[in-house]
Every structure is written in structure tokens, then in C-alpha cells.
Length: 250
Figure (cartoon, rainbow, N blue to C red):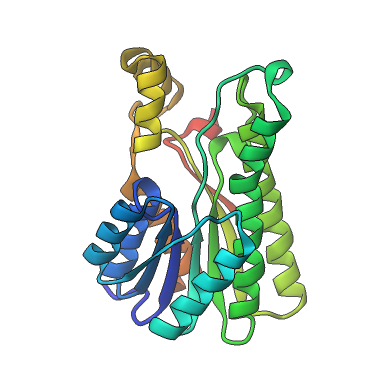
């Protein structure tokens, strides 16, 4: 307990899934948390559970980021943790049938939003220090058929993370920046995939592709984020951390 005691964290996409689990864990470990999401009712509920605050936040809109940092600082204190987690689920379609509109929709949230979070996170943390973790995916490292736009956006998170980490080190900013790469995790996003394609088929394929032969839990990702933002990760920057039951080790 107390691994991030007294620190202020922003968690985007915090209304459910990985974001909600991470907001709860950071709170348990002593952080003051601003939960942001476009799902207002669920977001407020998570923030209440964490003893934190909530803000509606479209991560693809730069002014929303400015307001999020201002709100966190004015109500909680200087921000030293950002979990850059908001994202959209893959849309399963061949590349040849992917519209430019669909491509841009993936990029707007999955990479533009992450860029804006890192940009304003650096501005907020460069004097006193901090840690940023962005959610990528196993498909940000290993490509997958039929989800090319999603894979490209998550691959962008991975390489942007490395560039930002190196830049902060070069500029002597005391900020560590890493990405986390979930495998198949039991979340509302996964549940919607099951509903689209059939639960038994999806579970069989995902479990079959995972060497540990199970689907992960949102808490598994939260524990990885905590490791990266707490002092346990004080000598770690620019990495991609897979939390995937061995998927990428195959």
C-alpha cells in the first residue's frame, strides 16, 4: 500500500475496463485521481469509488486536454502520473474495404489522443517530474489481419512512446514514458467483440492463441501500469511492456 501515495494521476478512458481498474488501484495505493471519459455516468461512479473527481473528456480534442490538466492541478495538485488509456476497439474489415473515415477515426483517438496526452503531460511534468504510460496492444507489435487501422494506430503508440522517452531524457526532463501492451483481457470491449462474432468462437481462438491458456483480467494491466509509474519502475523508460499471457513470446 502507498506506492504512489500523495501523487496526482489522470486516467483517461477511466469509466470502464483497463482505465477503471487502474484508477481504482492507483487510488488504493494513495494517488488522487482525475477520471476522464466520454461516458459520464460510469465515469462519475468510478471517480466516486476512488474518492477522486471526474471530467468529460474527448481525448482527440486538444482543449479538453488543457482543461483536464487545469482541473487536476486546481482541485488535486500537480500531476505526476498520466495513464493515457482511452481508445477505440478494432473494426474488423479488410484494408481494401477500409474507408478513409474509418482509418481517421482510429487515428483520432488511438494515436492523436495519446500524442496530445504526452504533449501536455510533458509540459505539466517537466519541472517536478512524473511518469506517463500509454495503452497500446499486442497488435501494436504483431500485426493482425482484418484490423489494419487498429494495428497501425497502436503501433504508432509504441514508437511515439520511445521517441518521447528519448526526447525527455535528452532534454533532462525527469519524466519516464512507457507503453503497455495488453493481450486478450476481459473487458466491455472484449464483450462487444464476443457479441459480434460469437462468444464461444472468440474465447476458443483467444485462449488457444495465449500460451497461459486463459483470458486476462483488467487488474493484470493495472498492476503493470502501477509498476511503471511507481518507484518500482524508476529506471525504466521507453519500453513496451506486454501483459499478454505469453502471446508475443510464441
